Amino acid sequence: MKTIKKTLKNKQGFTLMEMVLVLFIISVLMLMIIPNVANTKKSVETKGTDALAVVVQTQANMYELDTGTEAASFTVLNTAGYLSDKQVTEATAKLTITAGEVEPIEVVVTP
Image 1 (cartoon, rainbow, N blue to C red):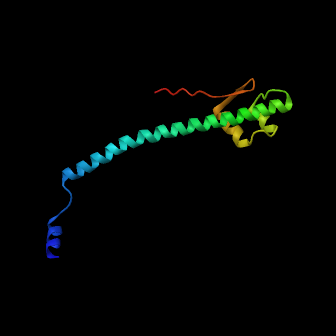
Image 2 (cartoon, rainbow, N blue to C red):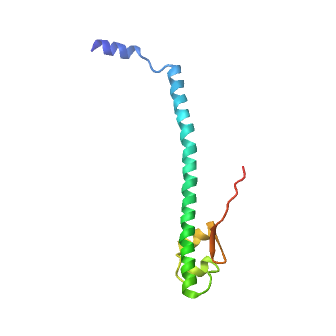
């Protein structure tokens, strides 16, 4: 027991090299993780927009079958009860409807 206490008493802490090595390993791990998180977020957003486009297109097709006319806007689909208010808000921000066809809005990102 005395040898353990003596060993611990002489040990003051980590050396500078040990700290630098730990910080280096942590920064390498962060460099590998952060880009993957950003790519995953973009992928999820794209899939969500695509799913919304499919739902809105289906509802636009149902509207056309029921009324015999193409849906001119998301508001028309909402008023007729085919889309909820939340769907209209999301669709207005991310989609366009032209001649009964629903398409995602293309966003161009400039560096």
